[in-house]
Amino acid sequence: MLDGFISRRLSGKLLLMTIAFVMLAEMVIFIPSAALYRQSWLEDRAERAGHITLALTGVPDFEGSEMLSKQFMADTDVEMLLTKREGMTELILGFPPDTTDFELVDLRNGTRLPKFRDMFRSYFGPETGYLRVQAEPVVEGQELLEYIVPKASLRQALRDYAERIFWLSAVIALITGTGLYLVLSAMIVRPIKNLAQGLSDFRENPELRRSNLPPSKRQDEIGQLQREFFDMKQSVRASFKQQERLATLGLAVAKINHDLRNVLTSAQLVSDRLAMDKEERVAKMGQRLVRAVDRGVKLCADVLNFSQSKEDPPDFETIRISLLLGEVAGDVLGAFGSGVRSIKFQNDVPSDLAVMGDPDHSYRIFNNLFRNAAQALASLPDDAAKRLISVKAEDVDGKIRISVSDSGPGLPDKVRENLFRAFVSASGNGSSGLGLTISRELAQAQGGNLILARSDDEGTQFDVEFLKNPPNA
Image 1: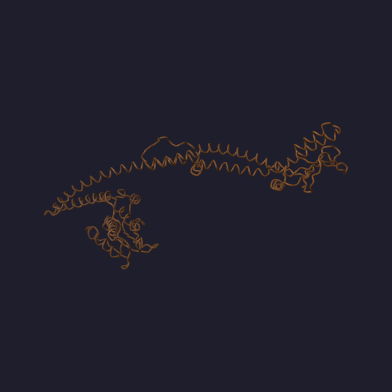
Image 2: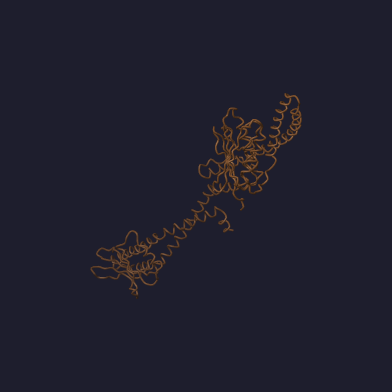
């Protein structure tokens, strides 16, 4: 259970890492502290040896000297104590050990920070042998104070010290880790857990408001994350609400358009009869009525097609693009009426150029572009010098780009800003603003694109991209 808590919970990992880093810091600190402890241990025995020397030599016939000597040797593990006076060695207590395995330690030249290697040698070295420790004497007139102590005593003292430090470090690490755990859990882990739960709940049901409380006013990254999440939920819910309203409105518009189209169909029959009337005045009025009704029918059809149907996936095949462009231009310019008889069509696309695409979708794309260009050219004054629609082709980044240009007045700024947005880019004259939107979708479905290359006083140019090969080739 503990392993699962540590492995799955951020708070458990935080607690474990805190304890580990505190213990690591204590281990780094332990090395110099153990070296200092070794030096203090030796200096303490040297100081106590000086005091016992002063007691024994200052009062030679003191009755308690034997008891003091035994107590000193039992407390310090010192086996022999001697001094030097005027070049002569004087044995104070104890007897020399029956060995020659001595390690000399001179405390008279000790530094403030002892050498770490001496500590490691005492801790990990052999237990046999003795330390021969030399120190400054306490009694006046003595030249040297020297005592002998077993290495095993110093080693055991260092290990006892290490054990005490370990348990003290463990307690410190546990207290520190628990404190950091509680603080960071309240400041970081719990808010992140609440955010994760909020994301999960929002993913399951974005419209369900489980809490209307605003985010906290924290100025750190957690507070920023809470505010961003709150704003995101508000935006997504507002978007869902808007989409729901638009869907309801679209359904209503579709129904209205369906009924209106039936009404306009009946009106179209009447207008056709008026257009065929023998009286010229009535016939002209009928023709105007026919055009108006046709625009209304077309507008209803565009809205219904955009809102109710989806385009079929493209059926790729090789298209002789020059022939397709000529066919589309003939249909558009031939059916546009007498107002555009002076429009010229210039086809600079090589006759042998082939692209991959859907012929029907491609026809609809260029039909819309040519029709828009013809409408723009028809709006020019009668004395306009040149009305021209031209097409050319070029190979760009492995795709064939077909450029459709006209010499019209260019698009208004308002139309250019919303050119490919449905119902927004309508320019009047019965336009619904759907033609370019649908044309771009058809071009992108074929692996290409439709973009506005330029539009200024000299005319407008649209670029249509096609693949050279099927997309899965």
